[in-house]
Length: 329
Length: 281
Image (tube, rainbow over all chains, first blue to last red; front, side):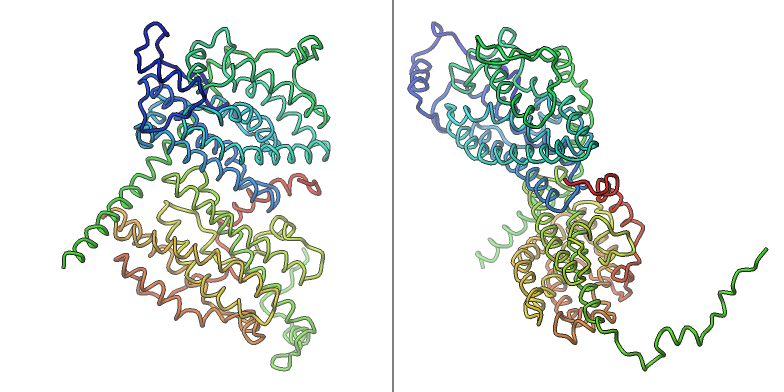
């Protein structure tokens, strides 16, 4: 899940205007809301935050995997990884475009990312230390993202829903390639197997954090769910993720780093240890292992590219002026 | 202390005998195969190393569309490298795969020109290098499509489709940045001057190139200079950039004498294969 703790701004049913009631009824009938149509200001603002955070997560999410492109161990792996990280840039592009339909520019959103005003998913503040992390990120991080994004294909806002449909197709390929790397490593040399287990140990709890805090502490969920921009609760998705992932880990011959993990026949799912929420809030505050590097890399790319963007704009203007001068002759 | 042999006065007669004597030297039976392998390594290594350099931009481009474009070009080039190196390994006949050639050779066995291994610099410098290379690569591949070797012609046809787009993009970008602002023009002029003498290695033909040309396998790079000058000249004129008045070329890359930069690329690229020999990934 790439959007965590998105603050939503809504009004209670009693305070709703007739327009707002009609809007809510459209959502309840599963109608899609399109850009030019009337929507409550709170809906618009909440969506901008959520889609923006999701877009930022895609482009910051390029960095942990980008970290291994130049060290990928074979030409094929290098191509697959490069294609995957490039897809993430593409997802960022779809999502910024979806956000733009709500009246906010991409540059404005990027400024808010760079200033620290807008967040991206906490998971990308963890380092990728070995090649097995390329497997574990695809398997666990993309796996968790899919868990959240598949239901979002049915979200109420049309452009967001359509972006999600495109993104989900590519994400499932990403998850499969991640699992394929894990298979190679888990069935490889003792050193490779050790790398695979180490990657699972480090990324397990940060992956569980991707779904956001427990429902009892998640203050903005109810309104977002009424608007259908959030389709399931955090705990529902986390449970589903654990239930899906544990057998996959067993198949790999790897051990999930949770001594209290056990199947609960009664609820038909696993009991598991919650991630350390203090660590989660520290990461959100900027104190994760890679926060400074990740945001620093984005800001550097943006600032180093300023002259390039200015030049492209200047050239486009000159070209247009020359064209109209020719047309005037 | 035993004295070392005098290196200044080698046994000339002995050396001449080993060399088969000047002029009367009969080519070894597989001399053409060796030259073909050498040529294929040059094709593969140029694509591999330039692809690697471009891939360093992934996630760090000046805007999202360009991040995607530069990664795309890296992907194309690495894909081409895989095809050329696989063929090189097959012709060599010692069972080496494309990965063996990419990941298990040291610097002196790489055959790329120095231009492609130099650090990226700013995004403009990366684009200038790409354009100077694309303009050569495009004309070279057009020649290779007509190769007498069907395997070479087949790879060239695939690569040409991609490289036609690479050239269109890099030419457009060089024009835009040359014509853009005072600052961008200054950066692009500096990049052109910095890279000019490295680009000219592309046209420095040697025995391998002449051997390939005679066999009808590949065009002689020296003969592509005219076409390249035309392409580069037209683009630089539109970009308002001045072509350096120098024909000096930094050479040696094609024969395996590189800049200091290639060693660092390989240290990074080959790390896993070197640290965990024989592992499958």
